[in-house]
Amino acid sequence: MDKRQLPDLIINGVSGGAGGTYNSVQIDGVGKVTGPIVTRIFKGNGHMNLKNDLSAEEAECNGTMKVLGHLRFNSLKVDGMITVGESFRGESCTLHGMLNIKGDCELEDFAGEGSFSVGGLLSAGHVDFKLQGQGKAHEIGVESLVIRQTNSGVWSKMLSGIIPKLRSELRARTIEGDFIDLEYTIADVIRGNIVIVGPGCTIERIEYRDQITVHPEAKVGKVEKIGE
Amino acid sequence: MEEDLISKKQLLELTGISYGQLYRWKRKQLIPEEWFIRKSTFTGQETFFPKDMILSRIDNIVNMKDGLSLDEMADKLSDKASFDRVSVSAAEIIERNIVSSVTLGKFGERLGVKNGYSFDQLTYLLAVDRLLSAGEMNMEEAELLFRTLMNKASNLESESWELFFIRKMGVSSFILAQAPAELWFDEGVKLVSKILSADVIEQLKGKLAFKLVE
Image (cartoon, rainbow over all chains, first blue to last red; front, side):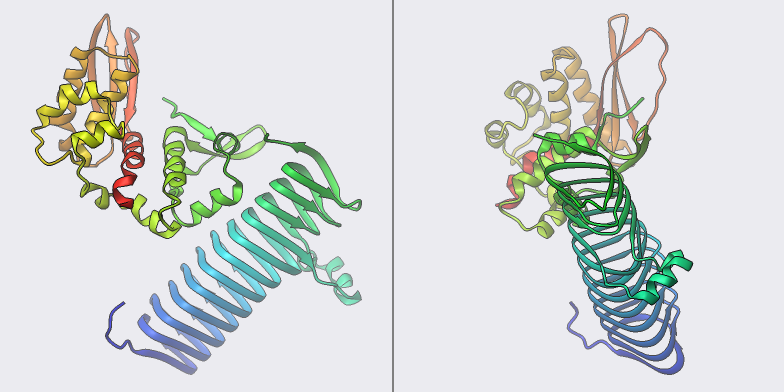
């Protein structure tokens, strides 16, 4: 890293910026940045609209953020909603709220509560997620995956009947991993070493290597043991 | 011509690695994105890999794992420049079984090497060695192939080439083309073998990994 002191970018109120390389970027209020940002620390409160890429070592987002390009980070904390136009890559991500990614999502640690949608591949070391709304990914490839549904009250149950997007369930075409522990999941294929299928699951086909547990309330099509 | 592919399932069975490891290595860019080839099959969409390349890459990763962290390995494997600096002595080539002593003895001297063989020179030797040891060509043809590679391969603009070894009515010849190339031959031509530079390079990287760990 360059020894020179990098500048800071501070946006307060309703304002914009051009992007560049910074030591820290702080946006409070409504901020719009047109160019790509490379920064050590990124802090956003309010409504952030980034028209290009964001790469940050430490990032924090409270409120809504839209990144049209790629988002890279070391650690990211989200309270609110993030929309990413391209790929999403980092070490660890803690999410409380909504995550919407059009491209691939690659993380080492992914934990949180809320809902997410990944257009491409969700690849992660460890996923520990509590669903409060829909989780969606085209493909999932992980070392360990734990999906739980948070206790939904009467209101959310009624609402989810009307609006399918609010139903707390995970939808994916294929899920592959070493350790898979699921609840309320709809998938075509699950392939893994240890597979635990909880209540509310509808799975067409499971291929497992070591161990399988299926909850009586789960609907599972074909189960096959592979390997040896 | 179809490239030789292997499905993800077969790959895992063959190598004994798990899904988690495979995805982890992909995230660390140890396995390039382009190698993940999506194809539709009767059971839906499946992922395939170029067989020779992925197998030797996984071999490399497994062998290098003890000495290096995943990030260090990713840097080394993707960075061809670090291999370009490598020079290998004749003794090491024999000891590490990089190419056979027959190939080395016959062609090695002709490279006029004093201090050690460079990465590019080794790729040529390895390509010749592959066909020779597979018993697909005789010494005379090996001679011709070696000369072709030495004189022509460096003229190619990109680093990746494909080599076609064909025979017609007992007369053999080589065609060197920039990859990806697709050629069609007349009926009398028998394609004896095809070599991709990417395959050879990948194999060689694995054999030379010890040079980088030191």
